[in-house]
Length: 254
Image 1 (cartoon, rainbow, N blue to C red):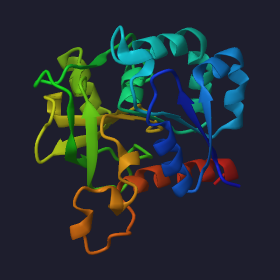
Image 2 (cartoon, rainbow, N blue to C red; image 1 turned 60 degrees about the vertical axis):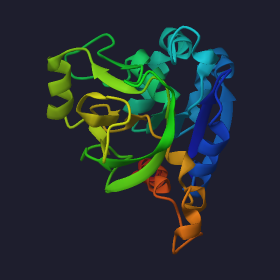
Image 3 (cartoon, rainbow, N blue to C red; image 1 turned 90 degrees about the horizontal axis):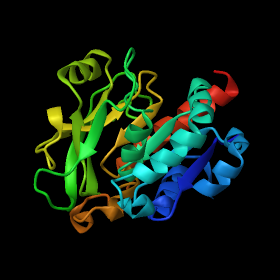
């Protein structure tokens, strides 16, 4: 049986359809739910084996990026989400979803630490950035980025600079192998240690600023007409496939 992925959206989410398509290409079924439906009935989470918080501008980022959606989750859904993760189910937050996971404290969740220990703040350029970049996988524990190597993905954010609260937190991320992705060939936003994505201590929860759902086909690349295999898979698809394979193995008891 295919694992079922919950695409959690709110007002302002605008990458939910692309994210659902990526998971379906990777072998999962998907269902898109508004946050209000899950707040009304948290037990709906039991229907799913993967959770995705897609990109966009949840609630317009009116207070700060991801803050309102993170507050809703923290107040009403944090315990069900922790049980979801404890059951071995993967969770991903892309761009705005990464900002949400940071503010809910599901990331980085370093052992012995509490409260929000990292942030994603304004790019060093003080401008919204929309371009293609290269990232390299780093963590050996993250189920999402296993064997990804280097890949080219687009970014689109104004608050993507990753900053840990202290040198202790920064060192903890390295020591606990929680740096999942780093920018290679140029840091677009000033993130500390070129960090593009981190995972939690279990390796199940991934947050990243680049958009892997926007490169699941070579036809999405701006240079697609010059590629030898114009209809090939995009490298972003491998990230989703890793999670689907993990969820399938957990579901089958492997």
